Length: 169
Image (cartoon, rainbow, N blue to C red):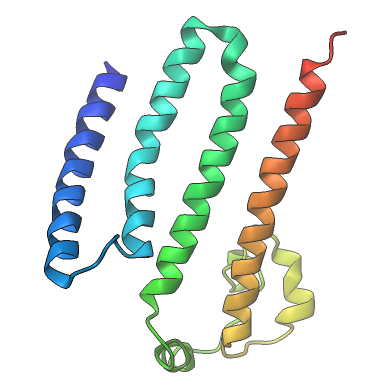
């Protein structure tokens, strides 16, 4: 039932998005849609992908190792797409610099309990936010590279785990 509901919702949303994108491309004379629209399509499709993978693993348990790797790669694509989408929303230069200047000072690299926003690695605040400061573009760039590093590490560890689990014991 969950698979059917997810499939119908995702298919309906993707259909609407694809028709709107096709019209926009035709009206603007583009060959393909912009990258941020492609990222949106990927994010909309991903819940259906996870449901199908889980459904297959129910009936073919041996496929679960391969499906875990596929979910890891798919999750990396979605996280990367979402990050690109959000960075694209800042606009073209000089708009990101203007937006960043308007943000109040904060201990950005600390965790939320210490007045920051970095709950994944809150101890980075010792090095990058010893006292409240304004956000700068290099902070945003560093956060983007941290996301990229996480994606590649996550996929690499899943590949390694799959390789180890394939070895007969």
